[in-house]
Image (tube, rainbow, N blue to C red; front, side, top):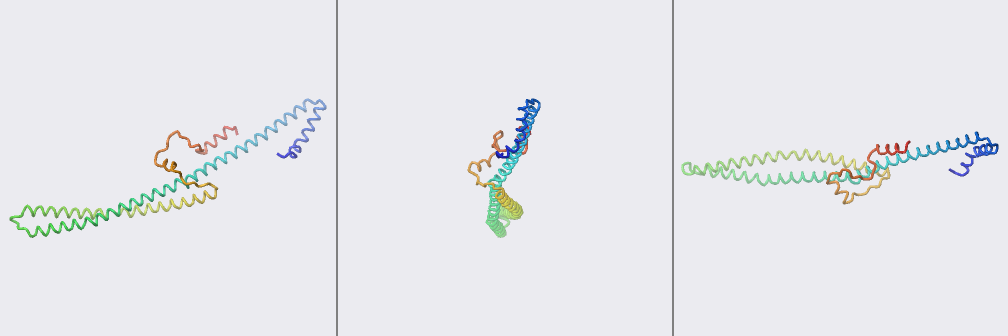
Amino acid sequence: MQTSEFISRHRGVMARLNHAFATADEATFEQLITDIYTQSGHTLRTDLARLSQALADALAKFQLDSRIAALAAKDIPNARLRLDHVLKMTEDAAHRTLDLIEQTAPVAESTANDARTLASTLDDRSHNDIRRFLGEVQGSADRVRANLTEVMLAQGFQDLTGQILNGIRTLIGEVESVLDELAKISGVEIRPPTRADAGMLHGPAVPGVSTGTVSDQSDVDDLIAGLGI
């Protein structure tokens, strides 16, 4: 408060107070003192309430800004990286499976054909055991070939899951962009996660360990209530 404003506000009160003192008007003097005390208390309570509200707003904004910063700098980028890793693993596994099928199918087919050809040239009377064995080889090769076909058809899941995962990844990328823009508008500093921060993501949270930040709106309300406002 400026000095001139202070003098202007209290000039009349001081004049009446001096007059009551000079005329020995004890009742008026005490009433004026009480009024001054009451007015000062009201002003103090008003200022304290305004300060408490400002503190509550600052704490709430800090909570929001901290969460935005954590999402934009660490949580969303790490989720995107993990999703990229899952996509790569499924694609690599699918390609490897198809490669093995392509390599194994001709071997099974060749084995079945050779067994069939050899069995047709043997004499029934002298090579019954060999013919029976070749028949079993041919049957086994046919089953292997059929199973490889089923495996190849089952790989169709990779196309579907890949489309779903790519859609999720696109959504995460859009959310990351929105968070970056929101952080810039809010003036939040985006810091890359440290090595220690990244390590924390691979384990469960430790119960009872405080991060030193406001956990939710109830903490802000409790703080205001503690001030008696």
